[in-house]
Figure 1 (cartoon, rainbow, N blue to C red):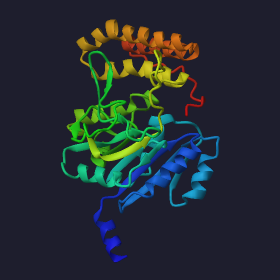
Figure 2: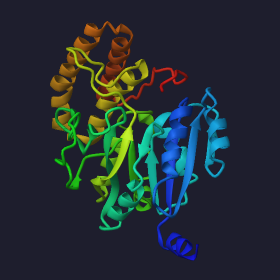
Figure 3: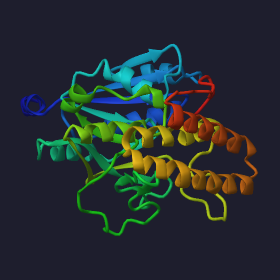
Figure 4: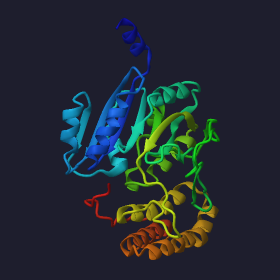
Length: 322
């Protein structure tokens, strides 16, 4: 008992911020894994984005020790994280999406790595597909500031030990530990993104202030996203109209804000149109005309922002996006 209290006092407090919406079962499973981690000093903040499936009530009943923030409307990914951040007291903040299962050593390894170098600002774990537990969905990620293409290191590969070295990376999605110093320097997430690219923008702003963003392979999570389905056509991870709209729009926003002017112009007149044709080909092949329409609408709004700087958001924020 005394030893545990001593270890808790020595360990830095970690605030775990979990935004969620209409993911009752996933959120309960996520919290179940979180409360099994071997780290002695953390608080948990669940931000419920106006769920209609009883998520908040289920969390309150199963985990009364959780700080539950109930939003009256859906603030989406960026807004949900910021809402949780207002209640965070920790030296570190662990942003965690509600559809993840954590390894027991995950939090300990992230904190240990963060404390190894004072220049570190964001540290992320290796991520696997939940349905294929040895198949990698993240071992680092970078966005080209010329083409706008996101490259995920190790994506869809089975883990054979090929990504066991820590490396500097462009950004970390889904689950990542952030030093409080980063929040003090750059603030929270830019809510104009709503979702998609808000994590990339956050990491880029941190990097510009001199903080390193690092992939830490000793920490692991399992993410409940579907593995790739064999076939000539794919949704490219954008399986809903909301996803398609914001992914298309925000790609241009991110590039305009962070690429050099010459590179942005090259992107706008060449790589941006090419990406639209590429995505349209897949959606037409799948006959997902609803998603294609949303993607084209988002691309147009992105183009308007790229040319005029005027930000538009025509996606209905009341839609379900789980």
